[in-house]
Length: 209
Image (cartoon, rainbow, N blue to C red; front, side, top):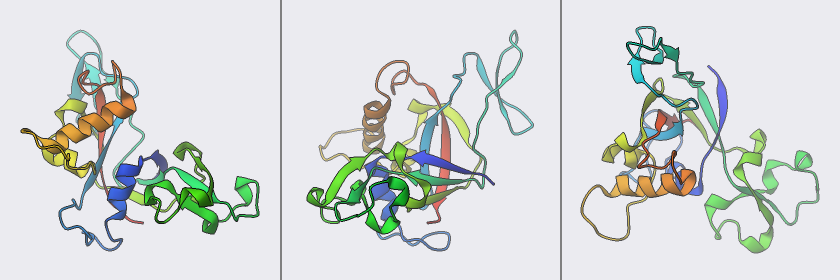
């Protein structure tokens, strides 16, 4: 078992915090939320030939001409992800260096203005800079990651990503559309956009902290 940092935006953090911590399956505050969550991360070296599922539990990029190239994946079933999110330091904190600040002085942007009014925060710090001791969410991978095209996501899987139901009525798959909009807001342009169909790792997990 390995532990990995992972970045989450406020939408997913708020979705995860809506679930009570406990035994599996966790008791949801909102019963409509899934017990098994998902997230998708880009495959570092995109597949250019064919995806081959090897008998050794690994995946390969190969065809009848090109020899198999292993598609490396740093995650495995049972690994733990600790979530890095946008955070800030309370203005009353006497320490100046982040290394000297205790968790009690930390506010989280995903909690909204009710829990951490902007007037009480020195400044918001990007999630990538969050030290491990400030994390409040940990996730355990329930399955080995699976490679797939990002636009192959189903409506049910999009819901498990924690995206919000669209406020504007329309026909089709509402959660899938919300996921597409969120994906493009992060990854944006070709070749990483939703319609470009890049390969991603599908990670399924439960919250353990």
